[in-house]
Image 1 (spheres, rainbow, N blue to C red):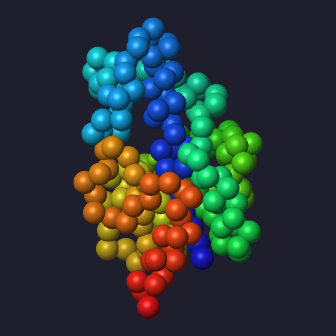
Image 2 (cartoon, rainbow, N blue to C red; image 1 turned 180 degrees about the horizontal axis):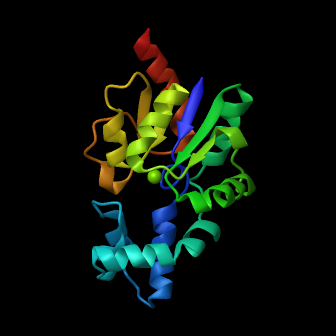
Length: 193
Ligand SMILES: [Mg+2]
C-alpha cells in the first residue's frame, strides 16, 4: 500500500514548538492552555500580533522553528518504520517552502523517519497537494489542516485527520496517537469487507 503523510502538525509537533519559541523570543509567558484551545492553525493571535505581524514573525523564525529540536509526536517515526518494514511505500507531502525542502528531508532522516528521496515532495501550495496525492495514487493520506483535507473529500483514498484543536469539527476518520495506526487500519479494512 502507498501511505502519504503531511509533516508539520501531523508527524511532528511544530506549532507547539513554535509557541514555546515565541514565548522565549518575545519574553512572554503565554499559557499553554490557550494554545491547546486555539481554533485556528496560526498562533500569532496568542501573542497579540496581527496576521501581517504574525506572518513576518513566522517567516523570520523559520530557521529555529524547522531545524532546532521540534519533537516528533510519540511513536510517529517508529510507526512509519514499521509500515516500511511491512513493505508499504511511505510518501511525504509537505507545503514547506521549496528552499527548505532538502534540509527538511535531511532533518526528517536524522529524526528517525524512513525517507526515500524520490518519495519526498515539498514546496507546493496547500491546494496543490491534492494533485500530487492523485498522481501518486495513494491508498492512505494523513494531514491536520482543514483546508487540505477538504480538497480530498470524494477522492478514492482513505483520508485520516491528525487530531488538533482546530480540526475537531471535521467529520473524517481521526488519529489521536500514532500508536493507534495499526488498529485503525485493521478496523478500516474490516469495514470494507
Ligand atoms: Mg500540517
